[in-house]
Length: 134
Ligand code: NI
Image (cartoon, rainbow, N blue to C red; front, side, top):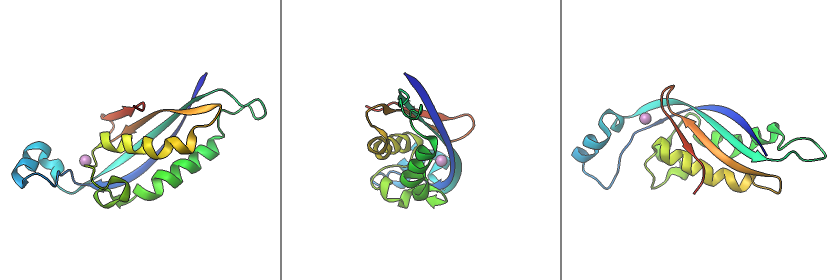
């Protein structure tokens, strides 16, 4: 078994808000993150697999790059996350983003010799979030 990783970057804006709560309670929970602001995110998508005997690849990284672009980047890069379809009814915290990205990537990646292993999402240089599936 070997792990392979593709790293990508995107920039998005959001405001953290639970629409079911009062303005005061939102401010209490989210503080200044309740205001409109942006992040430069980095995402690392790691796959676990065995090399295909014909190609020697676990997965061609050009293909992984395309999957990440089509399923995630075109939907979130330079977008306001609160209004993006995949985050409907979700507070766009980095935790929720990592879990949602897993949900959209996994069916596009898993096949006989390879499966999605982890998603690591950097919100800042100092804060990152990892999801390994359920
Ligand atoms: Ni934020």
